[in-house]
Amino acid sequence: MSGARVLLVDDQPLLRHSLAMIIDNEPDLTVVGEAGDGDDAVAYARDTLPDVILMDVRMPRLDGLTATRRICADPALSRTRVLVLSMFELDEYVYEALHAGASGFLLKDARPEELIEAIRRTHRGESLFAPSILTRLVAHYVAAPRPDRPTPALRRLTGREVEVLTLIGGGLSNDEIATALVISVKTVKTHITHLIAKLAARDRAQLVIAAFDAGLVRPRR
Image 1 (tube, rainbow, N blue to C red):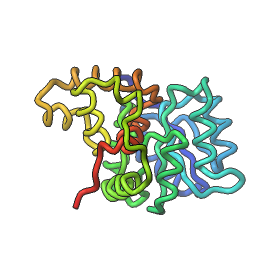
Image 2 (image 1 turned 135 degrees about the vertical axis):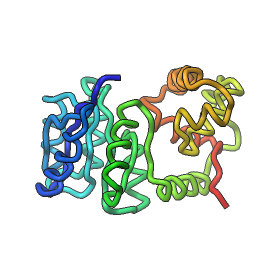
Image 3 (image 1 turned 30 degrees about the vertical axis):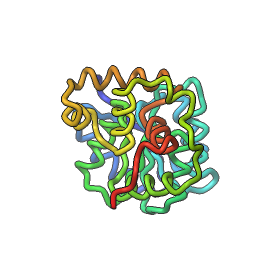
């Protein structure tokens, strides 16, 4: 996969500058623009068509969650992925970010190498969540009311596809899924392509939601 074009969205200029220096130092990543609020984020996204947007949550004029929802609903930005970057590990932010269409949620205390890997994984179409966030997210969905019967869409899945969906919901990467199921990474990617089509999911993050909603994932005890 070619390099990723990144749009930075945060209301703190100093943080944007620091992030830009870290990202532009990587040969396969390029910062194509910066925005200080959600309104500018939507406008700049339409102008620059970035591959990945690093999106802050709390911003003036228009918050990052609303901006994410508008970006992910825009057909012209169907190839753009949003990675929410926040200093707050608040549950409602994570749930709202997921349903808004974000592909991941990372805390601002992440190390530079973790940020870079998160951008690359998001660009590859993989969902990315900090471990502590993923654990709480699973617990929330398990506690939420769900129908006793599986959805019609899940009934169309093969046994192997259900296994892959379950592991995706657990936050495993393609390599980790391949190891767990003793199959090739190429086969994992094929299953994910089928899952996205059968479940009408926009991307891997929506497969995570599907796994939670179907009760395929349980919190660790």
